Image (cartoon, rainbow, N blue to C red; front, top):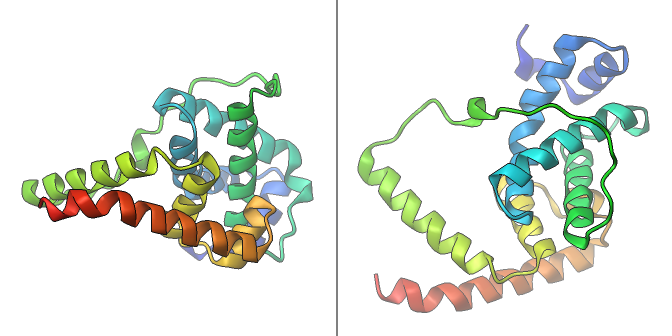
Length: 188
């Protein structure tokens, strides 16, 4: 079965019917988004994996609330975003038992050359260092916008914020990043 051809509506219908293949596709399709958002918002890879487990358990238990006429990404993003915020605020966890998870398959199979990898690594480290001082919500918004490609409307749906608030927060976060990165980039 060609996973990329399955629409979100078909996938959600099949998941609601309990199709295990559909659940595997859903997890493969959404895990990178969930993991990247969680990794930006929580303290490290181990906690990000815990968030992933919690998010997919929440998705499984609340799939009936998903509107199949909409895209899955904003809905999954919102669950991830809210789960991370609850963790950051110290709210008690759901208590749903989960098993250890392995995310080795998230890696990209196409490996660039060593120079490209070194340049990407340096750029990523600079960006992550600059982003560390931002509020967790702003980090998540930047990740969802630029890593996941969500539109303003999808960000609003994923976070529950008004579109104008999204635009303002993104503008301010980008301005702060530019200010933090400018001295470092002049040295290069």
